Image (cartoon, rainbow, N blue to C red; front, side):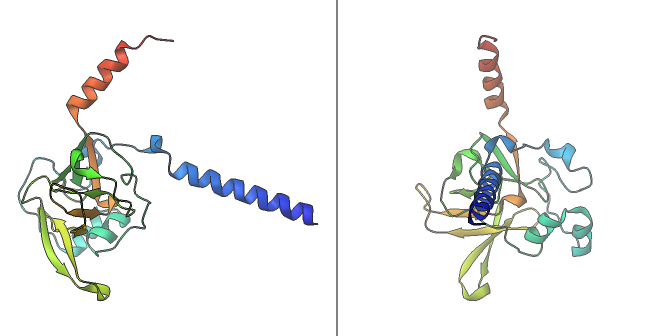
Length: 195
């Protein structure tokens, strides 16, 4: 009986470790073809900078539940669950709600907080700020400058040159790989000897 219990425990531990390693596998990250993936969202655009103001019931119709929960209800995804938390490809991060450009990949850093972190937004108008005193804490909420969707919070414990840490929920981010970086990578891959 004790031997069977040990084997069962060993099997359960192996299964748990396999799940853990699978969820952290960087090769499972998919970059999205931005506009084509957002066909059900009429306001999604990487080029339109006009402000977006939709009623809550409209957002609920066009956004997936996980994005709606964070972006419109000011939720928070669990730490270390975002595909972008330890993702460092070159490109641009966009608002998953409206397509607004938010951060360049070269401002992303490993903060250890469990969420994608950046030290600077892409422009002064890409992010808006609001005081957040929820849950007995004093924080600064950051929202998309185009659609006012909740992104996360900004803290003053980031690296130089700004000293800021924009702690962002990965579920409200989209990513587009830098075209020049992708072109150079593909050229290098073509130069490698086959087989």
